[in-house]
Length: 501
Ligand code: SF4
Image 1 (tube, rainbow, N blue to C red):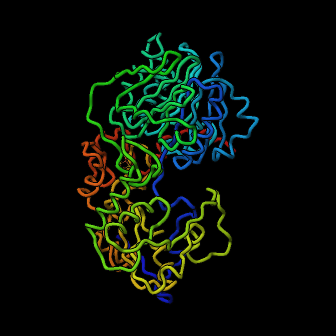
Image 2 (tube, rainbow, N blue to C red; image 1 turned 90 degrees about the horizontal axis):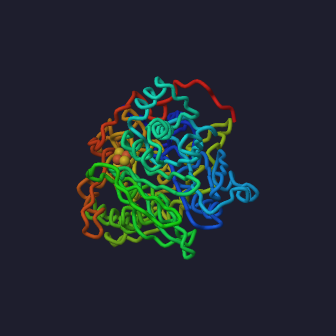
């Protein structure tokens, strides 16, 4: 590991210039690819989709889009930015009809521009339809090359577009048959919504990497979403998870289930519970809040320490910190405040300010931590740079001891299934031992939750579930066929038409 020493003039202060990463509010954490929401059987379908997307904003902030239908035509609007920025009231009014699907995007494959915003629109011999995808395909590059050679002309660089070309070339005349034929050829992580003029389809890949839940409103309309937090705001009652490998069709007759794939063992993304999903959601049949609290309890049992207060790195670590405090008996306190008002395009001022990147997002409450021995609970360390800055902020206000506890195992491997985790070269735990990371971060002690205990914490109701833990263990449940040097995001960077926005 290349070690970076702190500034010798200020014992615990690190200069920005030593960390040549761009200043971004989002830089310290892995990012989810997308959030999806769909509704069928409600006269205000687009309005409810807007609300659903709003509550799924944490899953993607680059672009947002909604497609609705009144049974005759499809209506689409999409734009760059967050949901509330993209949809003005007049746009929502134009999205008429009783059914709609929506999508929040954060790109892990394909560039971030308007042409790549979803839902994708399609005109084909199968009719007009629209598709929204959460996840990442691991054979999209191979499929795309094959399709291009056969004459397909792609409109975007998102991996999901291969699905519609495979449908079109399937030789099937029936829509459901064409969709199933296409799905059998793609590999990877996908929770998909497809809207036609008369039905809404929802499908979860056979491994079930990404969550997808089914609900129903009091007026009888069915809803589908990445997480149940999107149901609460749209007054939907959670019915059940859509199962790994299940495809449902929702139409005027109700919900029909299909299982078009060979049976396979599920591998649910363990990181959804640790970090990505909202704690007020139910995913994978469990409360994220309860799982996360359990992770904190396990962490306290595995890495106990004498301290005065437990402090969380907000927001995603707050529940795990509560679990740690509950189990250890050490009082929980709010010692760090996170600003929620940072856009993705925050411009760094000309003048370099020490720890600027961390300070713009976080601030320490001095009176809560001065002269205290603190247990600082976080849910992950990626490159380690922001953690380093946070620690120096605590030192600078006089924290006596800092014991860092991570409610997950060390992140050592990238993800090919829809989460933007840095490459192995960039991940600090891939190149350094825990002792070296502890030294680099200048903490008094560092403890990661072991993989065995992370699995233990996931089993809330005694029901055995199988998890993907590849970013911790390196055991990939699906061979990432298109794996290239560098980031998954650059997979289609050879395509040269740039969109100016
Ligand atoms: S590699 Fe990690 S982030 Fe990716 S699906 Fe598996 S557990 Fe989730």
